Length: 133
Image 1: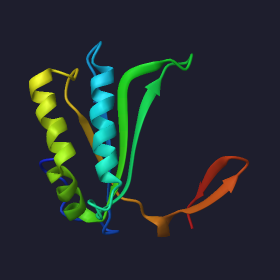
Image 2: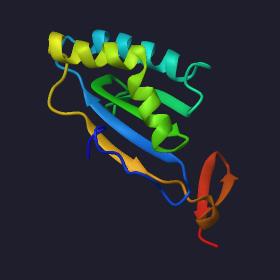
Image 3: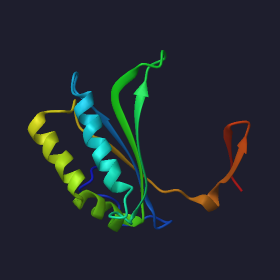
């Protein structure tokens, strides 16, 4: 799936996604800088349809950073995602991806829907236990 064709709706009305972005060797800092700018705008009042936007990095078994960024996003439906994509920081990142050859391969996008009524969340000793009702 791509950002160009997200689901039109979900059962909950929300739209969540996980984007997996692999930077080319030596380009990790540039990708991180762009993602910080996108995150700053996503979490501002300028994007009220963005509920959650978190940029993370994969690590190996020794805790060393890998060139893979995983972005976890939550929107108030497809309209929230469209507004995010239209934002200046996201547009700048998209332009940089084309002009600066920052990525290894394609960005992976997984769309999700959180069905709170289907799961009971319980925090137990620092772990979350999921139970189906």
